[in-house]
Image (cartoon, rainbow over all chains, first blue to last red; front, side):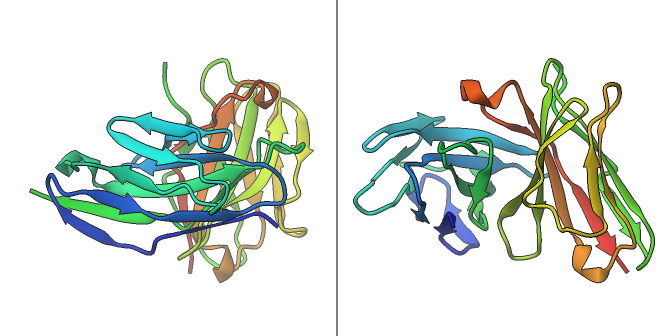
Amino acid sequence: GDSVTQMEGPVTLSEEAFLTINCTYTATGYPSLFWYVQYPGEGLQLLLKATKADDKGSNKGFEATYRKETTSFHLEKGSVQVSDSAVYFCALSDPGGSNYKLTFGKGTLLTVNP
Amino acid sequence: NAGVMQNPRHLVRRRGQEARLRCSPMKGHSHVYWYRQLPEEGLKFMVYLQKENIIDESGMPKERFSAEFPKEGPSILRIQQVVRGDSAAYFCASSPDPRDGYEQYFGPGTRLTVT
């Protein structure tokens, strides 16, 4: 079945550092890929998405590129802020009939110190 | 526009009791999804409901778990005779028709602890 593997946390960075959170996937079809973010005490929010190979999703300074050849969708940000501290989830949906069914990674806790 | 509401946020039950988790979707959304996050695991799909219909319950345990989304009122996830292994965070999401590719909007979750 489909699965998502993402970088184990927690990740601790200083403000303005470069961030990478790795995410790889296995899927039977041609999935859409997502990054969700969960701030403390809140629900998951969609951060960015990509629906086909070589697409780059971007939002709030975060970017991720859909790499079909390496089955990866790594999240990057050039300069993190304290307000980026949250849990980040990589996810996929397989459009082959059950596109509503999201498959998530375990989540990566990011803490950014001033 | 209020987001997805879930209550309670924290629920403690003794083994053998029933747990009822509520989810109110965003205004205008008629599609609801429940996910479970066990400790050290990612969120796992449980069930997809439309008003008065269960569309896909392939992720629901076969026994003790049930879900509904009545014509009026919130969606309810019910766990009967809870066991320690049911301790988890339960997330609800809602969307417009997923066939149009709309994203799912998540609630803050209910943390269930079974003692």
